[in-house]
Structures are given as C-alpha cells and as structure tokens.
Image (cartoon, rainbow, N blue to C red; front, side, top):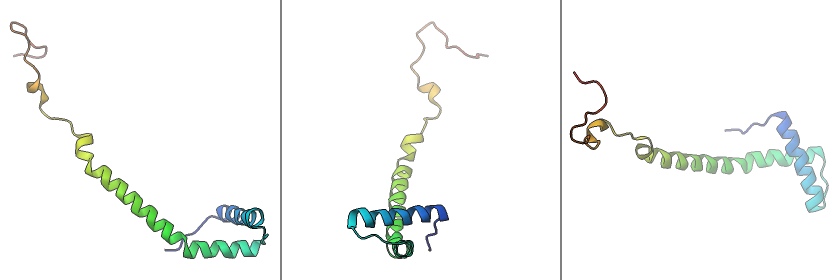
Length: 96
C-alpha cells in the first residue's frame, strides 16, 4: 500500500526536513534532496509505523469490545427485583 500525501503536507514535510538538516545536522539540503529523502522515508519507514499503528488500534478496539458486555449491559425485568413496597402501601402505577 503506497502512502500518499497531499501536496501541502508533502511541501511542509520537505521544509521540515530542510530545517532539520540545516539546524540540527549542520548540512543544508535543497528541495530535491529533501523530496528524495521524504520519498525514501515513505517507502522504507512509513509502512512499519503504519503497521504498528494499525496493530495498536486493533488491540485497543479488541480490549474495548471484550468489555462491551460489562460496559453497556442494562439488567432486564428489574421491576420485580426492587424491594417490595412497605406493607399497606401500593406501588405507583396502573393497577386493574
């Protein structure tokens, strides 16, 4: 799966690479070099990061789905589990 970026994101990443190389490595690079380096990163590094992100998301969702019964369970037919009304008092509601 090829990772595609919008032109705006690609431009901003190339500018970031240029700034990093100039400020942190002390070796300025041009537009072509930054573009080629970005292309290399997208082809070689990004798939590993993407795969790990997908694995993390799957683990998170499986954990949440495993607890779904406890999270979203509402007991049914709970009316008759309530404590009885005090003797001589009727429960509110319809009585035939």
